[in-house]
Length: 476
Image 1 (cartoon, rainbow, N blue to C red):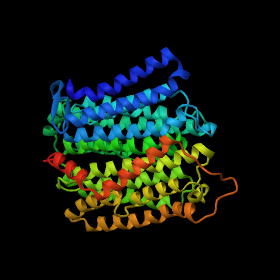
Image 2 (image 1 turned 60 degrees about the vertical axis):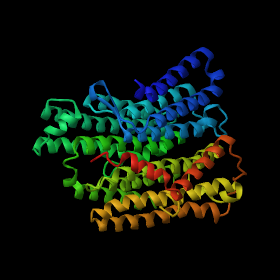
Image 3 (image 1 turned 90 degrees about the vertical axis):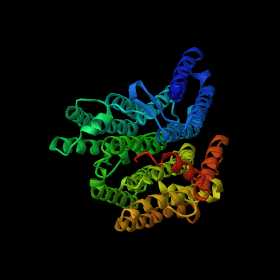
Image 4 (image 1 turned 90 degrees about the horizontal axis):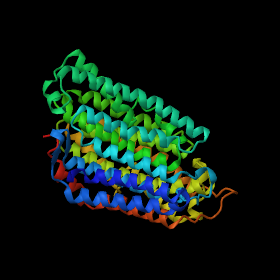
């Protein structure tokens, strides 16, 4: 059971938080639960780091932990830890703006931990039943978190997310059911050996692609993202931007590499067109956005388009390239949302124009936001540039130079709309209502740590070299 220890630690922490909240009461438990969760996450990450990259198989091969699974688990833990740090000020009642206060801190942390456990189990699933149960455990808590604030816009976001999420789950379940009918087994390896190109298989593949499109917010399955991102509490929006993307990519790894790997080369053109449409729509529509959270939603959609480049062709470098890009995206998004969360917490404003003059009121926040946005745009030597370089190389090696050119053009377009925020912070004068900002030590620490990681991943090759060394044989 040693390979299950990270999941056991996470679930045990959720149970412990529940018990402490019952025994101590919500008020007394407020200031100790978040640090306790952070300690548990550090412990789970430490165990995963010690056990990787060894491969383990449990429950008759239904639960497999390999090098890719270990990296995904670490990325999921990193995402959850970053969001807990960003939620500190909003959980203990110190939010300056009343609507920013999350409330029910113990329940919030419990749901976050169960979502994390679901994502960690998802990447290790090698059976249809465990795959679907893990996927639902990783999805349903996000529906609850999206409607956490109980405001009208948050409730609307939760309802939209539930309806469209239920539709996506139904499509996935129908597709998985068809695959079971074709093979007579729930084991992914057995199903993969029995698959042949038939109308039923093509229908199942189409349904699975639709479900994956929703999880990754790919065009035309992206319509939920802007409304949910805007309506959800800001820390939840930050978590959605990284956790749902990571979970969707993990599901795509299992479906496209482990289940349908033999058919993947034949679908290169379809994947390339899907990537082109996703990155183009995300970047073009982001230009006209005025709300910072809707802006980040379309930015997230465009990033999903770049991630799809890693699935092109038989080039095995696509696996480490996608993992590295996801790592860079996680730390960069945590940096961006560190600023967004504090700014929204201090004055309740979420419009891009409200960031005018931020560099004069707090230079660190403005600098952190600028560096993180430049990384998302792919400016060297930041991690976003390095990650895009590896992904673009995959498409280039496969001969899709038109897609590389389009991706480079989209990166240029993204620089334009990211510079709109930089212009507000550094050129536009501060509005009359503006006041000096003083972020908490925890938020400043989180921002600085995320910025250091964003820069280090871009200029130091060790992270990518290790990911490449440990995961290069995943699809061979």
